[in-house]
Length: 140
Image: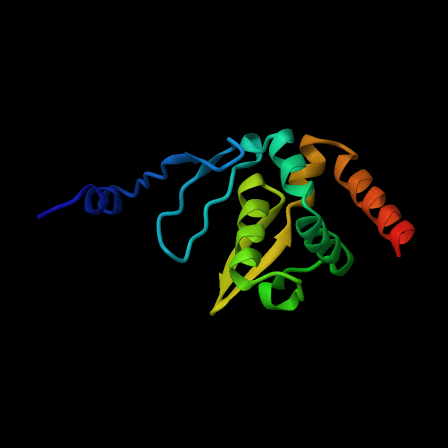
């Protein structure tokens, strides 16, 4: 019995349905369990980015990624939350378009989508990072 997926593979077409994350941002659904859903650049919404960065844990993750400026595995981050909550935070960042996640072997690598964010919202990302750094200095 042939399925729609069989027909898509044979024709070279892929059907990646659009879904919405919890903040209402449309993301392209993954087609395999190892491929993660990310919004295309033109699907990234300002309110989704601001929502993602409004959480202190998620901002902490993004600040650490910005300092290293390289793809990092989830295990790099030492966070004061459970593993399932950490997974949730990374999912929110990915679905909002703040980070890109790809599998390398068994590790899920995380990289900032700085170029996409700067193209869509010039200066915003760097301003948010500077404000977060200033706040962290003030509170320490």
